[in-house]
Image (tube, rainbow, N blue to C red; front, side):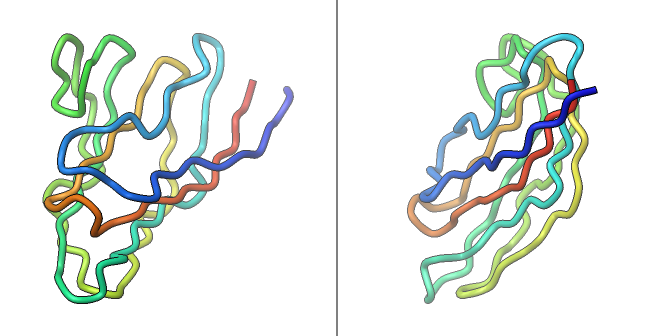
Length: 116
């Protein structure tokens, strides 16, 4: 079994769904070892939405595919603070989507281990 370490990030999360991570395909698994969301606004709280879907989805709502799970749904991130959502295991055909309540307030960073 081969392992590959990498990172995923979105420096400026939009108020519409953005694809944060697309799985590596059938026969692989990924462990997001740490998924952090930081409020970079400094003044206002902002909400984060994080969803896992199948590969057919066209957004975090599961449109055109299937919503598998919400990791975060309207979770408030206070100004100047960071929230760590911990470990998240996803299958090779899964996607991870992010959305913020306000564009430019939040940044997302994750450490990823691909297992093939």
